[in-house]
Picture 1 (cartoon, rainbow, N blue to C red):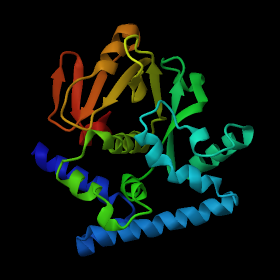
Picture 2 (picture 1 turned 90 degrees about the vertical axis):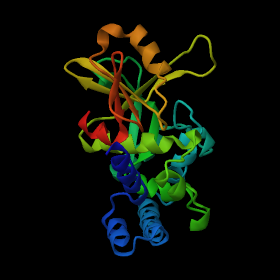
Picture 3 (picture 1 turned 60 degrees about the vertical axis):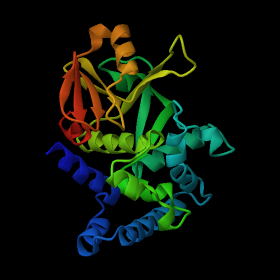
Picture 4 (picture 1 turned 180 degrees about the horizontal axis):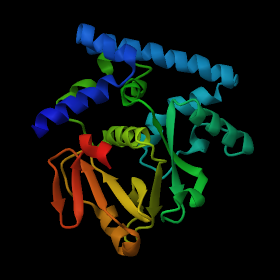
Length: 263
């Protein structure tokens, strides 16, 4: 049962939830045609962005989302996308992009507690698409459909770990759809140059629920473990969202990704 649900969920990730894309898949069962519909939707987005910002910077920020997530950095790096860097105008552009309802922004909280909105860093954030199906198409926007390896690999559960940010995007989409404001947290790993990162933090009952996302079935959770040691008195529940069966690993609840809607 879990295998079938996961395959159905991966299919949803590929098609997405845009009515035109869903309708095309139901009619044709053809990913190429679905991808063409999604490309048309992305083109409409680009046209709207140019109406908001004639300089084209909004489009550049939007198009760079997959590449930024692929870097596995602790934030969206404006300076690597636009020469202008940070400014009050850039904050306005990010706000415009968020208000367009095409993207989701997860802000870094500088002090992880139940009042995360009071401690968010407006200049440190990760950006996702509101629709993961569109995200799949945006990743290969400048290439022919035949070069988009995501469809076959994801549907057959052969997605490489360096494409795991697809699962981060869909979990962000699910959490936001349930009315959650998105936050994440990074902190230094004393024995590595790579920081620990809690992919998402939810506030529940004046406590925190840290979430780590895995694109595979591996149940390693170093960031969760380190976060638990550092902030044990602030935690209500700990979650590992991954691609295997529902289970518990000591005090960590391991959820198949399609169950993220119940968090």
